[in-house]
Amino acid sequence: MVSVALEKAQVSAIAERVIQILREIRLSEPLTVFDRIAYDDQPLETPIDEEFRVGVIGLAYVSDRHLIEIDLQAISDSESAEDDLLEVDLSAEQDILRVLMTLGYAESFAKRANSVVSAGRAPCPFCGGPIDPNGHLCPRSNGYRR
Image (cartoon, rainbow, N blue to C red; front, side):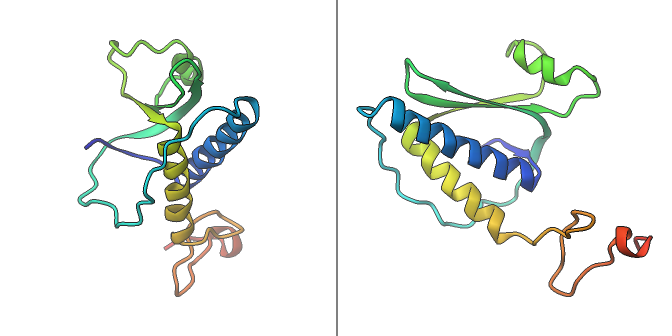
């Protein structure tokens, strides 16, 4: 299994967009059949060793195959990283993960992603850092971090 590291906001944005794409498919192609996938609520497999941290994300619907495509590219030092994903060559030496999912699996993935994100620690409204059950020292409200 391959694992990559994403921020909570990135996972949430992917799930939101996948749900939006699926809604658009249902409206524009009402005869398209979504396969039923059993909901997975099992704990994530550990250890989780990331191959790379994700920077650029691409989402697409492959209409002729009825698949959702998600491209995850490693954080790049290049300022033109967003342009790089548009012209990606999978044979090149770039850290990129391309995932193709059936529509039913994409729907299950989005539900699971939202579940995992909502189970995490709430973000601080000031600094965006995670708030522990005992609170946290916010550098924006008190000026320093321990």
